[in-house]
Length: 129
Image (cartoon, rainbow, N blue to C red):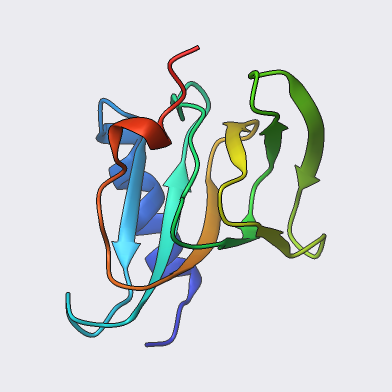
């Protein structure tokens, strides 16, 4: 798959129409793949709860737009903010790290990768504060 602006534009249009203000493109070959690779289009106002992944780290790259990634300690206190823009940092979020993000620009698209097949977040992986 060659990821061109046309794909990013289509994904962004779908995110704008989605009540959650986001839409992802699954880049796996099948549900049996042992890694997760996706593009995630985000619009300002999308809600990303504080969460963690107990079984995998997560790698994020900002393809276009602008977002901030937030890190939290075990008590839910904000410990770090990373500014994510195209050509900026590649972020590897350690397994078990509480995190969230805020979309700051319409048309934001990020690439995400995680280990293992997809599993929905478990109850203890979403912050209940």
